[in-house]
Length: 567
Ligand SMILES: *[C@@H]1O[C@H](CO)[C@@H](O)[C@H](O)[C@H]1NC(C)=O
Ligand SMILES: *[C@@H]1O[C@H](CO)[C@@H](O)[C@H](O)[C@H]1NC(C)=O
Image 1 (cartoon, protein in one colour):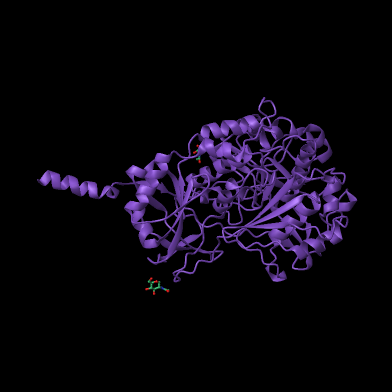
Image 2: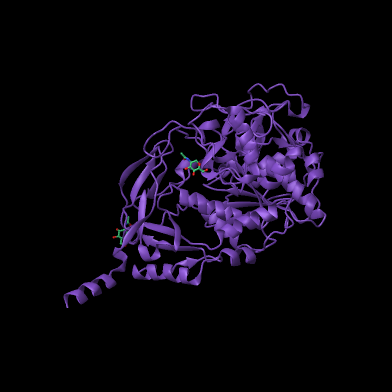
């Protein structure tokens, strides 16, 4: 009797058998304020274990490597989804776990690999055997409800890749430097660049030759997060001054993701978003141009019963994009947001990176700015490891460190040298991918023992390419101003890539898709190698640009007409 009773009790409480699923040290700069209110609502995003990720990655390489017979044979949405969709038994196990916790509903995405469900902190704490706290980022004052560690019952452990918001601390809005328009312009040797960077300057410097897209099949995308809104009136004013051949009716279309908005009052116009749409618009006019505004941002209000909607925006955006039918998504997308890699939980970085690989397999070229802190990484770079040991080290940035995207660093002046702000270095999460290993080895050989211990010699090298990153003239809130940052470089390089894609599509060929295997094997012949300058930080001079690939400017800046002959 006694044994039977114990058995029954154990069966009735299968969830008592917890094991830690994920943990991540609270990033530097965040402090604990209080326990999280039990009635605060969380929109939990449950990443269900995908199948065949290895096959997805090998397919990505096959369709992106010009030496492969499958080059350009991009997958359809359905093919990607069929390849990686979780097993039904996996999905059932996740639902059973929710049910055991009295949680009903849950919304499964089109690919059946993300399940979102709204629960209270009280429910989440029981489901995840953890304790949520309210944390604040000291410098930005951003507040978030998070936990550095959580557990899952063993029976569901291997069916789930990750759950957020848990260990991932909210992205901090990245500020791009604004320099006053009165600062003395550098003397440049391309006359159209004499008064700072404009579309005409980039056209001349990067040998774009006034290319006018005409395929009518290309689409270029700009992502906006964290309350950065793109303003149509600012774009029109900018084009009138700097690209007068663009029709006054030319505009971007707006796609709102996960409760995103894009208010058009002048006061809401964001510097980052305006910069992106103005340069992408000027360089790719009249290409169809989409601005994605993804909701999900702080501030969190600790005592409201409302859901704070502070999910990680890349996940929401990716979820949205991965569900879109073929033909509706841009062939080229630029994103100017990033975090220090170490602030991003490993499980999250891997899943997001694999999700980027899905877009790459479908033929999308994804470009990300590398960051603005030189070797110290992002804006709040501390140059200290986040593992509790506070080891002094250079900080790589994410998503730039994901090997399935193209990271864009920065240059300055003409002739071009590396911009000091250009973040670059080596990932601690992702190993050196084969497409760049010869380049990285050769750079490390030149570097010798310099900075030993400050960087990871087996990591993915960042960035892949570069473009101008200082003194960009933009219109924001009706006024001209000048901005700096790799936020300028990514839309610039994306503009060139979009034109290459347009050129290919016009000939009935597939777009370039994931760029790196092509860039490192062929495309580099159409890039200007940047061989001087460095990216100082962490009380060092940083890495130096040099002949060939380097962790400041990558393979270099574009020469459009030469690239056109190489595609
Ligand atoms: C939140 O909801 C609970 C009950 O649902 C209520 O008792 C509490 O007062 C609410 N808190 C706020 C700040 O509205
Ligand atoms: C260095 O990078 C590799 C990936 O190539 C990773 O496995 C390793 O943990 C990293 N080392 C450190 C100290 O982060």
